[in-house]
Length: 116
Image (cartoon, rainbow, N blue to C red):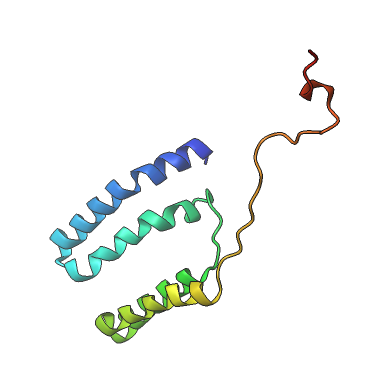
C-alpha cells in the first residue's frame, strides 16, 4: 500500500468512524458500545505504519482507564486517574533541550568587519 493511500485513509477515518457508529447504532441498536469506533481516529496512523507508537505515562493512564471502565464498568470514579498525569509531570518534568537556530558565526571571519 502506497504512503499516499495510507494518508488518504487516515484523513477519511473520521468519516468512516461516523458511518460505522451510525450503522452499528441503527442496525443493531448498540449505541452504548458503538462509540468505540471513534477510537480508530487516533489509532489509525499507528495501524497503517505512518507513526510509531511511543509508550508514555498518559498512554498508560488512558489504557488503565479503558480497562477499568470496560471490565468493571467504573467509568465515573475511573476518570480520577487522569489527575495522575499532571502530578507525574510535576514530579518528573520532561527533559527540554534548547537548540540554537541559525548558522554559527566564527569571530575570526573577515566578513564581520567593515573597513572604513
